[in-house]
View 1 (cartoon, helix red, strand yellow):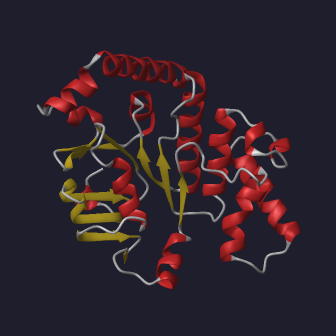
View 2 (cartoon, rainbow, N blue to C red):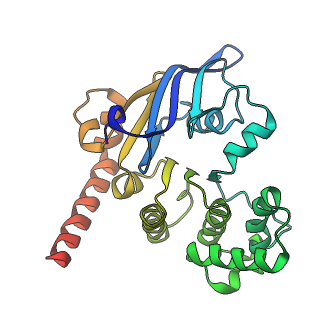
Length: 271
């Protein structure tokens, strides 16, 4: 997917983020196209989460422009920003569920914020639907986060992120802490939802299997900017040391082999 030819959902130009004298991003540019799953990777301290916070308005950059869904996110008043925020959903690390609320009540939180006039019966029906969409069992609704497994917490967080039928989905390390089987199943769920709902997905991850399995492009953060944003085969042609170490190291080669085996299996099944 070529950003020059796409319908941009996120456009970042000249972004600069710093904390005191520590500069995190400097003159960072990135375009995210409608309908793609873009993975964001980088070494420790490269500011992956800071970048996401800048996009969603939780971090005010020192310089630069951030446009989301055709609207600038810089210096918006609260009412204007709220109208934009209702069009996206966010799955934070570790789910970030409210521990004193049930799964269903967690899902209902954003709905109540934006649509306070909806009655409780309809809220419960919507929550049940989102639970099913996220591949949670029906009895997950009345449970509290402490009663869920790690994988179920992720799915509950995803269900809440989908509560308002977003166009854009932000995922921050969605498979962190999951075993390989659970992580692969979660990847398949994200890919299925993206196709069925026409979502654009901004995905921060360290999981090489996820990058190979579901990402259309990968944006690499290094040297305080996005040094490349391209499909993995194109990234592999670049001679940047971090890219080569990350994708051509033992774990990278293993992930590539797994992706190749999966593609061959699918090909044989379709044939």
